[in-house]
Amino acid sequence: MNEQNIIGKYVPNFITLLSLSSGFTSIRFSLKGEWEIAIYLVLLATIFDFFDGWFARKLKSGSNFGAELDSLSDFVSFGVAPSILVYLWSTNVLGSLGWGATLFFVICSALRLARFTADIYITNKPIDKNEYFTGVPSPAAAGLILLPLFIFFEFGMDILKNEYLNLITTVLIGFMMISKIPTISLKKININQKYKTWIFLIFVIACVALISKIWLTLIILFGSYILSIFYTIIQSRKVKN
Image (cartoon, rainbow, N blue to C red; front, side):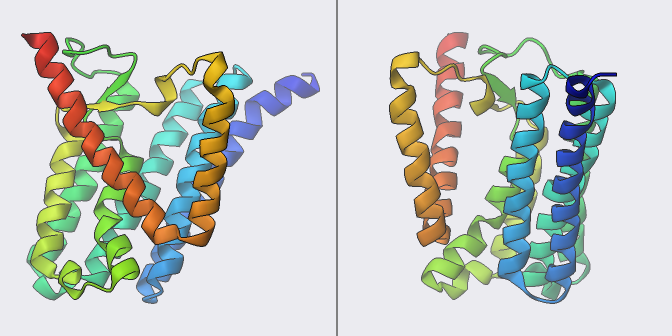
C-alpha cells in the first residue's frame, strides 16, 4: 500500500474521530456548567465534520466504514451533546418533561442519521435532490437548538433561558430533522470560477467575524439558515404547482 492510499484510507476517519472526541468532550463541560466551552467544542466538531467529508471526496476514499463512523460521530456531537447542553442550561427544571424533550431530540437525530446511512430517504422530493437535503441535517439542527444560547450570550436576554421556550424549540427542531422539509445543501453548490475570489473573500470575512464577534456572527449565520428553509419550502411549492 503506497503512501497516498494510506493517507486516503486513514486521514478522513481520523478527522471523524476528532469530531467525535470534540462532541463527547463538550458533554463533560456541559456537566460542569461551562457553557461557552461546551459550545466551542460542538463548533469544533462541526469543523472536523466538514473536513472529513471534504478529504474523503478529494482523496476519493469514501467507504461504508467511513459513512457509518461519520454517522455515529454526528449522533454524539450533534444529537447528544447539544441537547444535553440545553437540558442542563435550561429545561432540566421541568424534570421528566424536560428530559423527555431532550430524549426526543436524540431519538430524532438517531432516526435521521440511520435513514441517511441506509439511504432510504423518500426519493420523490419536490426539488432537485442533488442540491437539497430532506429535513434539517444534524449539524444544522445542533446550531438551531443552541441559537437561544448564542442570543443569550450576545444580548443577555434572560427570556431566552425560559425552560418552556427551549422545550418547544428542542421538540420542534427534532421534528424538523425527520421531516420532509427540503433544506439547502452547501456541499452540493457549484461555485462559478469567476466568483471564487469573492467567495474566498466572504469566507475570510466570516472567519474574522467569528473570531471577533462569535455569538453575533453565529446568530446571523443561523438566522440566515432559517430564512433559507422558508426559501426552499417556497421553491418546493412552486415546483409542485
